Image 1 (cartoon, rainbow, N blue to C red):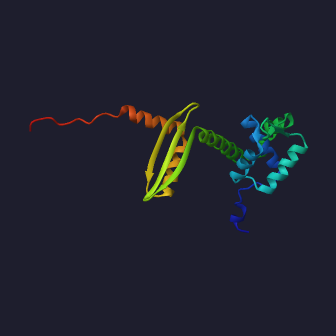
Image 2: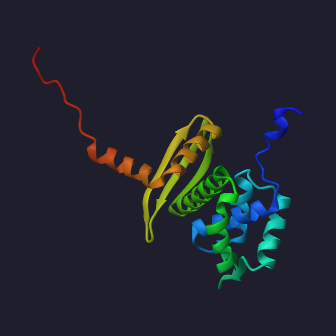
Image 3: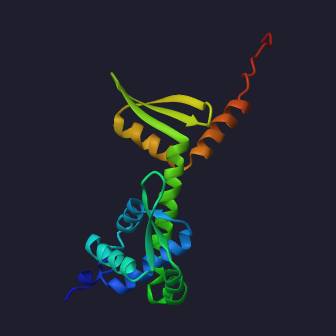
Length: 191
């Protein structure tokens, strides 16, 4: 058998997945919407859909995780005391690289959700290219409303993706650049 056959990055062992999901919920330390947990778990490439479903079913049936519904009707997974014990005492049975990959995936996922609430990006095609329309939002007003031109939609989306990586940093750099901008020196000598 070739080594490439062993290179599968997905964990297909439900008990290990149970530990990983409990560990992830433990590290996040807040209820996680069912769709969000799915996106994080499957999106990292660590967990296969079918094994994810088996693991969630096990965790719910055995009281490690519970589903709660908020006032808006959104269902969330909440780690229970048995799940906390699982995460704390059995974490070493799940490879650290997978634990880290899931937690990092979750942190990035929630940072992106927060960024999307702080900034709105739209793409507006024009005759010879595309605008990336950026609005930095505050509670009562737009902090910034800016259009950047790109030669095509692909490059416009690349600009938008880079801005979404750190919207507050982008806004800060634009303001800093505006405040440090100065009139050029003019040569008024009689030479």
